[in-house]
Amino acid sequence: MAKLKLSSFLSGVSGRAGNAVYRYTKNGTELSDRPFVNNPNTPAQSLARSAFSKATKAWKTLTAAQAAAWNAYAASITETEAVTGVKTKRSGFNWYVALSSRFYQVNNMAGTAPATPPASAFTGDALTFTLGAQSGGIKVTASGGNSAGTVTALMFQKLTSANSKPQKAKYTTKAYFAFPSGSPATTVPLAPGVYSVAIQYVSTATGQETAIQVLGTVSGVTFAVAAPDASAKKKAA
Image (cartoon, rainbow, N blue to C red; front, side, top):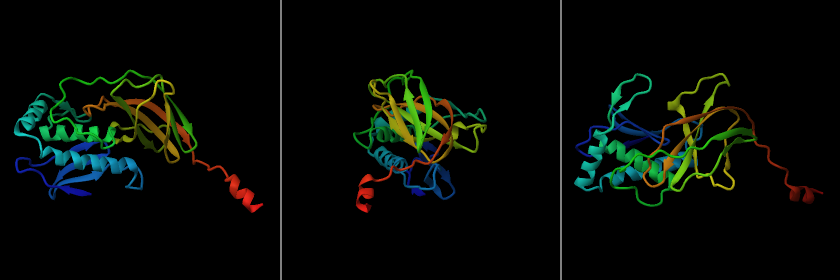
């Protein structure tokens, strides 16, 4: 867990960006990973931490006019907490870090996140998906390719059983994938178990994302079995 030092005019920040969670505590603002696996240094988690760090540092380089634009953008958006129904507003800093973090994740840390807020809404694509349990993962097949500038965030939530009800706040993004039109499928490596699968569309230009779309539950993910090494058998013979 990392602690963040905020600018003098910010009291605290809370929420999440991709696989990173940041919250205001009595000890200051802290950054941690969203729990999903025992290994805290998976590629996705490392990318999320790097993206979050780069975004928070970049906020300090914005001009006063750019920061004011983000504050105005934040003031125009009201969000409703899914469980309690409480209406909330994020700060301009919160919105900048959330979108910039996602921008860096989908672009694999390349490029520079926009210094100004998005000028229009992002609606993503309208693909349909089929799911299949594989040895060592889940295969996700799309009905077509993603449109230019859009990738699909592949999200998973491990369940205790096929009858368990998933919670939207507990999905973890395992991969960002731009489905190609010719062969729109990919297999995401996962430990054995039962998973609820969901997706979001993400803009590679702005970091905007659509609402979570739950695809369904997949049972039967098993351990991947490595094929025997033919060359080793030859040597042994």
